[in-house]
Amino acid sequence: MQITDRVALITGGASGLGKATAQTILDAGGRVALVDLNADLANQVAKELGDRAIAFAADVRDEAAVQAAVDGTVEAFGGVHININCAGLGAATRTVGRDGPMPLNTFEFVVGINLIGTFNSLRLCAAAMAKNEPIGKDQERGVIVNTASAAAFDGQIGQAAYSASKGGVVGMTLPIARDLGRIGVRICTIAPGIFETPLMLSAPDRVKQPLIDAVQFPHRLGEPPEFGLMCKQIIENPYLNGETIRLDGAIRMAPK
Image (tube, rainbow, N blue to C red; front, side, top):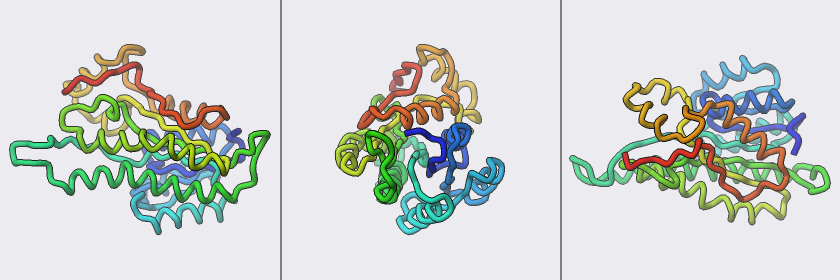
């Protein structure tokens, strides 16, 4: 799908990977709807990006709030053609720690945002995409890109909840591709390694340096525009579907 004049709804769009991807979409001639829990930041970023960007406040777990963002995007821009799901959070809690077992609500909270929130957003966007006029020889109506993590494959100590949530995103990619093929919608997942997000940039060198050392090449952290570029390549390559792509410089995480 060509991005020019297409509309992308991006969750977690006000910062980090989501914000960088929004800029990539705009640079390619598209329009963006930023969906973020932080309403003030989302509105500020949309204003900075210009009149081809709008913002909505929503918790991705909230069906009504996400549906309102989808409906508002369709009303403002005429449709949703691309959905990129970057909303999520990290967490580190051992299964059994000094104070006993991990609280169950900690596990539920992480899975709720990273996995259930991702599914909630993509299913509502896919329903909107089904109403689009088909495009080109393949009769394509939409493209979805989800965000997993290298931790889906080699999670570290304390990452049981996080790895489970991101592993779930990986695991649902193929069946969703099979579900949505009949309406002309593709889906892929990106599993990024360690990127220069605001959270990582604020970490001390003793935390960052071992991660950089584990990256094979290029020997550095990922840059958010590289994530945006991967999204662009998925959107524009019509034969990419049902796949999870590691974007991590060949990092393989140590246990800790």
